Length: 285
Image (cartoon, helix red, strand yellow):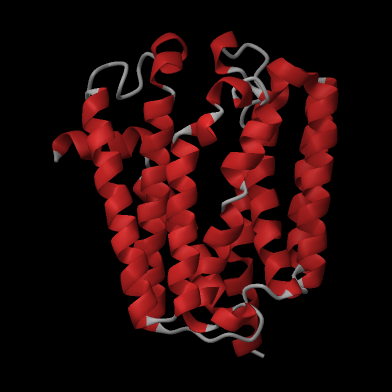
């Protein structure tokens, strides 16, 4: 147990992840005239925790060979855990997700259970790089897109617990893609260090800053459109503009990449809690 606590401290900071998970869960329940409910909220928290924790250890397992060179201080390279231990944990968590999907199906709805089951199956294939690992590893943007698009369904899972009939409507799909775009922007902005180890194969190393800047503008536009559709632009457009301005700063001084990373991190937190903010605002009149 002590080793897992060390792992969480180093690679899965509980407070940060619980803040993201709680934001996604509560906002999903209350956004667009929804209402909070304790049982769905708790169920969503458990389900999303399983997803994010599995996602984390899958990434660390896949990145083991790269981390030996680029991040030797991480848990697997420094042998806090053996790779085989993580592989066992991945299999157990996958089984737990499939069981959770069946329980969700029985306690809530077929759509909610199916949503979670699709997430579980997608993660299963994502861990195996969709069986095209040699090809996809050479295309960072495609890799990032295929590994983050699942955020759309993760965002809609809390919605499916209480309003399953709405998850494929335009407004809720816009909400899901808005959150996905915020995460994609963050994933790009956290990898803008020009001096990163070449084995990391970052967006920047493959495509250069100009193309990455254009990609970020595109993801920010997706977030902005989603914010407009969900009537949350008054809160979200300013932070999206801050991210864009931070990228402009990096454009002229690449050593300032940490500013863009910080702005994109704040943007993710604000986006996942935006639904809760507007719900509280409506309650207060």
